[in-house]
Length: 472
Ligand code: SF4
Ligand code: SF4
Image (cartoon, rainbow, N blue to C red; front, side):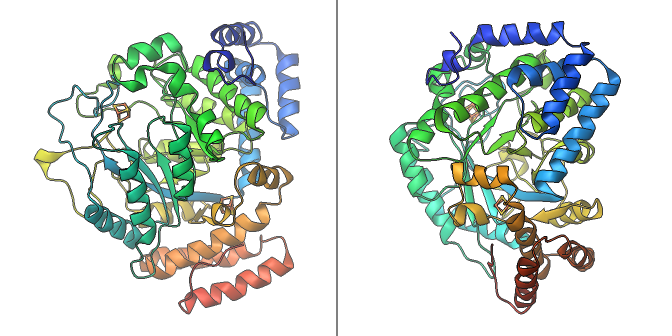
């Protein structure tokens, strides 16, 4: 029985409810009156239910689809302005006891190089990341209680926060590790993590069990209820995602939104972020063996529909996608992107030797962070290295209420400009610096409050003189 408030996976992700939703969406995909009423609701920026959003995703009327894209772009502008938050993944270890059939770290893969960073390795990697200009990391590790116990993850987080190289600092560590216990989530919270990220991979239970034939991840319910335990452990910023390509995308889309609705119904706060990875080639993984791959147009429509359905949730895209796809999706709702990523264990401080490759997937965007930052600015975006909210205690429902009232904008714009100024001063090439200084000057005019603008202008001068880490 479908129940968004239930803490049982099969009740808040009810299979029959998803099937009914897809049937409803199919029956109404050309129902102009219904589609118009859903779009009107979306225009009021109140979000949509999984059923309503599924109708939009199924919509076959070209003019309504166009309207949907325009609305997604407008919502993106209203909530996020032209800011794009930057981050980088850091792979700690690719030891893994699970058998996920789409990931080269699966236990049966005997030829991929298995690596685990020591604390000394982490210092080298994080120093290299700081020297690029990164301030925000997403930690990644396989599931392996012997090689990657929670103590190792906690020690690594402590090491990362302690590294201060030149003017560098990692100010927010998001963590993407396997589903764990309430007690371990509490320990992660106490270690000062930002967002806890866990991809569902697929919401379809039967497929999930086939795609995860061995290892603890095989347990669909335990995996799907992970965010509940994270919330119970005091982590109130959680990041959802599915791996598009494994199952029918419309099924995943409905499941993803039902998961978001569940978090809102049960804990009063929806997901902090949603990621939209697509399955990619990697070591012994061929994406063509999965039947449910989605093309770029479908991917764009999914992104736009998520943006419309959950306007307050950040949306993330990684370097799995190439420059062209990233550029298109930035318009439609993406608010965070990674730059200059390495998807191997190690690889920031020095390249991996050819015979010791440990990548999780092939990167499709190989540009440097400086190139990505300049590209964004030339497109009119403000690359932001801001990490202020979590450090000011603006998390969970406190963060969401500031988002919903629009007040967060008073912080985001000046914080983006101040952190960009830090980046330009410390790390950018002369050309990027020139483009960036012009952008900051122009965008300061868009700081709404006179008082905030005045303080931000003073701080920009202080940053040029060597002071760091201002925030609103
Ligand atoms: S997806 Fe995660 S759990 Fe599965 S094999 Fe890869 S690293 Fe392990
Ligand atoms: S002020 Fe908060 S919401 Fe805005 S960019 Fe910074 S961390 Fe994100």
